[in-house]
Length: 204
Image (cartoon, rainbow, N blue to C red; front, side, top):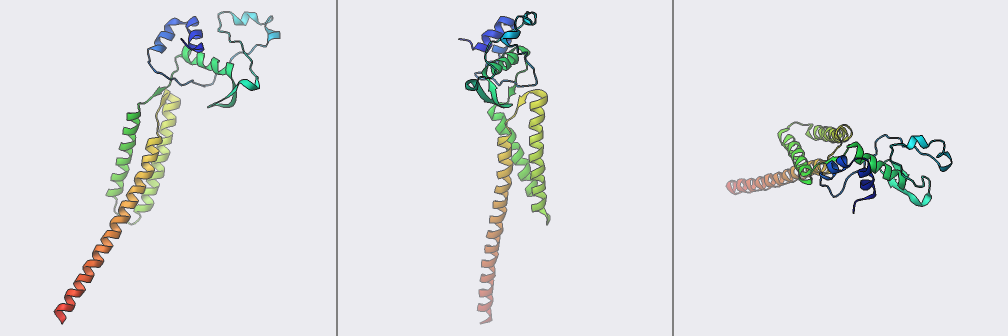
């Protein structure tokens, strides 16, 4: 059975709906972009009937407190408005394109690899401060890049993986550097003790 929005959209354009169905997605995102829907109250209907010619008309309560729902753009949107946005999404062809989960992970691994390589190549006294600056810069650029693709191209990139990898990648790098420093210190300390004992034996 088609959804209400899909069946309503097919009344307007079967070709657009067929193109929409070819996307083959089980779930689709509703695009709540700037759009104003005409709202006509029952008492205004007789005087504004001509405005409904060749239009899709949805009938429902716009302010029913029992039919208000949380959406990404509103904490309380009526069900009829959500249906209107859904129908508008299908008919406008402004669909969201979501990258595959493996692609998101690939971006995350590449980002983490670059950061770790930069960390290993830097050998200056202010390495810690410099890496923190690079980390914050990369986190900012990641957020900006996700925003750009979402707003300008309707592409959803799940950068949560990248943000997580960038954060914990540097943290893992800090742990690695700290552990190697401790192990090197212990190794040098043991060698120093051994050398001291050897010198004492030769002295005796």
